[in-house]
Amino acid sequence: MKKSILSARQLCKSFAHNGGQIHVLSHIDLELFEGDFTVVMGASGSGKSTLLYALSGMDRATAGQVFYEDRDLVSMKEKTLTSLRCTDFGFIFQQMHLINNLSLLENITVPGYLNKNRSAAGVREKAESLLEAMGLGHVKTHLPSQVSGGEQQRCAIARAVIHTPRLLFADEPTGALNRASTIEVLNLLTRLNQDGQSILMVTHDLKAAVRATRILYLEDGKITGELSLPPYNAKEEKSRENQINVWLNSLEW
Ligand SMILES: Nc1ncnc2c1ncn2[C@@H]1O[C@H](COP(=O)(O)OP(=O)(O)O)[C@@H](O)[C@H]1O
Ligand SMILES: [Mg+2]
Image (cartoon, rainbow, N blue to C red; front, side, top):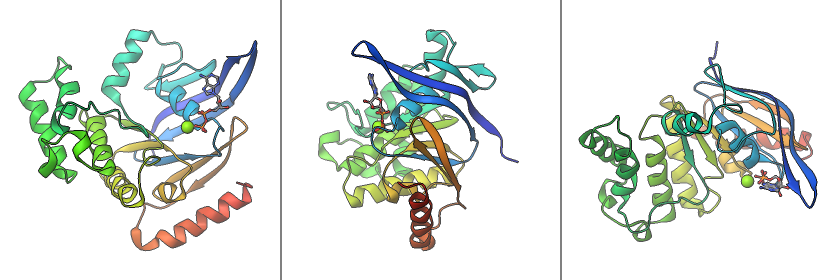
């Protein structure tokens, strides 16, 4: 039986707009499991990013609860929430948010140095080994502007996992990349997942969704569909894509 890692109960999120309210998420019940590569799909504007921000405590839900290890992120004090996000969660985005005047290695070590519980030498050693494992050893002293978009995003992934988060959140991580870089980044995420990293990724790209072990479909503020898949295997890419396409068509995607 899979272990639950995060669960949302009756999650709602609205935004004040022009004197009224926009209801983006409506009474969502959802459970995420350890070891899964969960993908959220849905049309642009369906609330995928809003859901990811509410589940990860980057933003607070308007109503409902998000339980992580029996603690509710929605009612948690800001300071506790910030510290939880730094220790237990990792984040990657469409834009990599690397610091332009730091090398790739420094981009990974600097946030680690800010963590008082870790030795600088330990952080550096971990960063070096992550960069090697991610095929970036030969460009570790380069600036972000001196490497490809795919290499930048792989560096951002290294930064996101250096503290071994229990859950890695990814918002359209391949949205700004060309085809070749997209495949590099997806291969890395797939490998991390197959090594045990739990991932929640939002995307509207079928090429990215095909890596999932579980896909949720978001529409009108609710989860209206769910598909489970066996672990990704490149040889079955076409048949997985077909399976997902048939499922999406049944949801009138
Ligand atoms: N801070 C905000 N204020 C007002 N409306 C917002 C805000 N953030 C998102 N929205 C609205 O919520 C809806 C969902 O947005 P989003 O979660 O970004 O969708 P997606 O990631 O699926 O494209 C959109 O209609 C968007 O305009
Ligand atoms: Mg979005």
